[in-house]
Length: 423
Image (cartoon, rainbow, N blue to C red; front, side, top):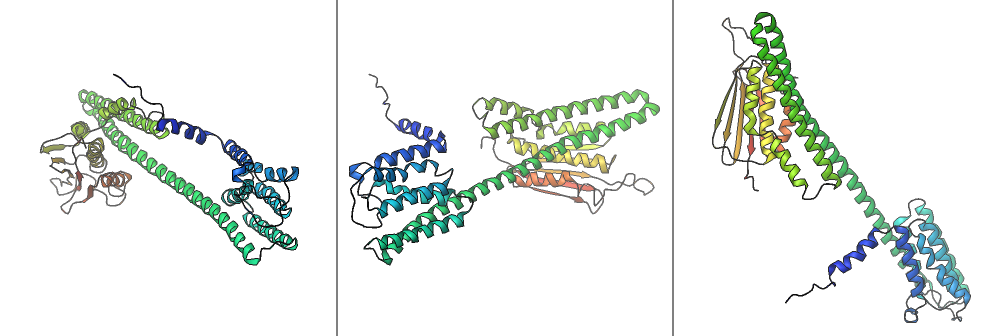
């Protein structure tokens, strides 16, 4: 036996709420004004409302109906023109009290208008508050002259109630402004962080491959005259490096496009998983560090590569950070210590990956340096590459140290915590 699911449930309640939230402010305020106007004439609610004068009650008539509607219908503009709405509602309330008509639920419109002025009035807030206070003092004086039994304490208590309603609206306005400012600042911080991330990625991709291509093309240009048969190998190396650069740039552009889609919510469905998986497959990983080593060797940089421990699958951000460490270190070696022996060591531990790249500053047979010394200022230590790389590693709770060695040369050492890929 099967049972049909009841249509009564949370979805039946959420649908009207969603429609109400999607409706414009004018529509919502219009509904509120009409509902209050209708409730003002409900007999069961006649004793609920604001009563100030306690004057002898007069029989209801056309004028009382008009004044009651004037206390409710102007609420349709309570957010667009809160000061004007308060002025009309307060004037109708004052006339209703001074003429001694019976209390109606429509007088609640004064509270709503006062709250709306405190919450939505942007300009001339002080003037609006001063005008409302002056109007209340004038009303109290008129009621007293008409024989109201209320004393100063009663009028003061009612004034404090109205002031409290205004302050509630003002606090809501301040809180909304603070939240809007917080969102603006958060968006600016996110934008700056995204720009920095893009700059790091472009630097890592472009600088390495362009440096390799420059070195390889210079070597090929030299070999054209000295060893023409080997010049072709240099041109092939330039071509391979260019293709590798294009492949990484396509991956980077794909990541940026996916980030933009996720930010706008246009591709936040299950269909995006396939795209993310495809990007992850094309992402540079530590396992492809041997390509970097081979590219450096083809550029004329003598590089030794060693790897210890068992290589296990790691999250994309860990793999990419480790790959960038090797890439940046080899780029600096080719730029600032061309032709000097370089040793790349990767150790896969149980809880971390340790990467060490050492470039020697070897002396020649005559005791003089055979290559330009590693600079201490604008070189590897002060460039954008190592600074961005250090920030990337720090985001993974890792550490990166780079600097000249006492015995000569330059060393880059990175420690990146690892975690199982299923986490």
